[in-house]
Each structure stands twice: as C-alpha cells, then as structure tokens.
Image: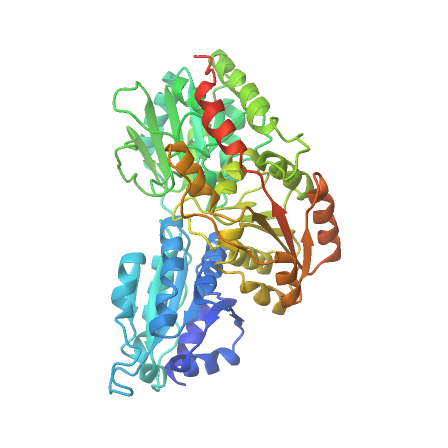
Length: 548
C-alpha cells in the first residue's frame, strides 16, 4: 500500500470516525484512501468551520477530532480553529497537504512554511518526510493532542510522500491514564478545608473535559459547600442545585462576587488562566486558593494558588471527600443569603417583560423554557454570550457550548453542526449574533446536505453590540460598529432551509417548539434590545449591596 493508505489506516486504528475539511489536489492520494475507509468525510464550505467542527468533536468526546485541508490558503484558514482548540483545551489533529518535497513541481506556487505557521498555535507540528514514519508520527500526534492540557497537533503530508510504497503497519493504540495526586497534597488540602470558615468551590473548564460530574457532586453533597462555575465549567453540576451560586460571566462586581469576597478558601477545580478570570486574586486579601487540576497551575498576576493538588481530578476529589467526611457548617448561612440574591436578581429579574424587541433576559428565559434538559445550545461570540453565561442555567455537562478562551466569532454554527452529528437524538440549537453568523453562515448548506435537524437563531441588532457596550462603558461615542444585514428569512430559504421571523413578544418559545417537532434546518431571525446592558451590567451591579 502507499503512505496515504497507511495514514488512513492509522487514523482508523485511533478510532477516528469523521474527518472535516476541504481537500485539494495535494490531498488526492489521501482522499482516495479515505474513500474506501470506514471514516466519514464531512465536506465543509470553509476550512475554518471544519476546524471548529473537529475541535468540537475533541471537546465532547475527549478524543482528537480531525480536520483536513490542502496547502497554502487552505492551511492558513485553519489557524483560527487551531488557536481555538489550543486555548480551549480541545484535542484535535490537523492534516494539511503540501507540494512534493523531493522535486519542484510548480516552483514556489502556493508554498508556505505551514509547519512554521502552525508551531505557535499547536502543541506539535511536523512534516511527514518518510512514509514508513507515519505510524509513529500519527500515534505521537494523537498522544500529544489528548494528554493534558489537550490541544491541536499538526501533520503535513506532502504529495510525493503520500504516494510512496510502505512496508509498515499502524502501531497499537495505548489508552491514556492520568496519574493520581500525591497523598501528602491531598492531606494538606484536607487541613485547609477543615480550617476554613467559609470555603467556596469553583468549577472550571478542566472539570468539563472528562467525566468528573459524579466526583464533584459527591464532594458538594458531603461537604455542603456552595459552588459557582466559570463560563466553560457550566453544567458539570446541575445549576438547579441548592448550593449553586451561578456562573462567573463577569470577572468582578456581580452578586456571586460577594460570596467570593467573603470566602476565606476557594477550591478551584479545573481552572486555566486562558479562560477569562472568574475572580481576581490579590496578594494580601487573606484568601487561600487550592488548585485542583490535571496539571500544575500556570501562575499569573491574577492567579497564584497557595496549594496545588495535581493529578486526575475525579480521583483527587474522591480522595478529598473521603478524607474530609465533614458536614455543613453554620458559616454557610451567608452564602445562603447570596444564593437568594442570585436567584432574585440574576435568574428571576427582567424575564417577564413583554416589550418588543425582547430584552436579553427574556430571550434567555424563553430559550431555557423551550430547551429540553439534555438539549445542547451552541453560542457564537457577542454581547448575548455574557447574558447566557450569567442567566442561563445549564443542567448537564457541555450542554451550553461557549468559548471563553479565544472567544472567536464565527464558531457557533459549525460547533452546533458537530454536536448534532455526535448527538443525533438530542435537540441542538445554534445561537448567533448577526455579526458572527455571517462569518460562517455558508455552513447552512453543510447542515442541509447532512440532513440534520438543527435550529439557528440569529440575534439581529445590525451592529457589533459587544463593542458598542464597551464604548458606552468607556464614555465614548459609538463609531464604526454598524452594518447592514440580509433578510435572514429569505437567506435561509435560498439554501432550502425554513426561515422564521419573530415579530412579537413571547413568540420565540412557540416557534422553537414547532421547529423541534418539524425537524430539518430552521433559521429564526430575532431582534434584540440591548438597552439593558448598561442598566443591569453597569448601573445595577455598581449599586448593588453585597451584604458585607
């Protein structure tokens, strides 16, 4: 067999089921090998979208997703997706083609140093220079992509190498196991928890990457500890839990930050400084932070934990829970009061308004009412992401897919497509701003070609609303942020999808339920009133009383 056949067999040995991408002439041998394999090629309309889909497969399965492009412009279109996976901790393998390396075929036409381009945004980038080296390179690529912290790995397969005759076979795949934390580190954490008067638990992205829900829930139930999540940690524990204080959609000055300010110990599970900080550490604030993660903390000016428990998160929490065996402390009374404030002012405030266009709070409320408990909501990036991160209760792990690391626009629709391919039996909705949607809206055709049941909501405000909010907060005039839009109903219909336009208050929930029942691809145009941004997120939070 040739090297391309061997490469695909190695991917099959790794358990790859889908490859997302756009092939080019330099991938033809690889494409032919793929044609007769068990792997499904998902042809996309842009390489960036293919990368977002592959990263989402990695995020949701824990095993590297795979994407494919040609050389030059096809490869550079994957850079944003590689960066998305790198910061977000999503295992992914990027495969790109290249001109022959043993002879010149077309001079320097389309040739870039793609490996050099990829090195800063991947964990590993390699060119395949020998067909017989492929088994070792593929096995190492998947190992590196999957080990903590997960991320993207790049392999470049030149055209002439792909056609070489080879005489080797795929290597045996070894399943990864995470080491357990040192017993002394566990016992030191036990001492700190027992000495604390007001301990608080933070659940972050690392806890959403592996199945640690049972361990976290057990720790919460045994200790009675109150908890909150980062944006990417939402849903690890059901946010309807009586000890949940919600999510840190902002870094400071929200209601739950009153609890953070009063806490004398914060147990930080799975936190990574690439995620926007849920709170800022201060050197002399009398607060101790315990870092529990698969890898040591990356120290930053706003994050410098005083104790670390490094190892498998679930095993660390099981050991900590068993050694503690403590029960609810009277000092949790203050956190109970903060819980009441959060329920009243975050989850219970503003959603009953019947104004039109609807406020973000009303949209969040109507979405949560319409979505099944296990439904998956994929967010693009924009002003609405803060509202959903703050006001939307996630009931299951990875049921609210958002990016709080690279925070790139254009990912919402491709991520939803990948989630629906993985979870065909679950309801999946993409929620995008008009700006982010138009960056990869062409993937509507991909969703239709794949015959997916998918709903896409486009929040329309004809501008870049997040930056407008920032301009207003800085006392600046709004400038350079308004644009025009197509008729999104007609736009959806031009692809063959169903188009809907919300024209009155309270209509969203009814339209959503109808779309879910009908199946197919639906696009819902929904205007939004962002005037609440300043009133709630600036004025109200500045004037709140923290009961300190």
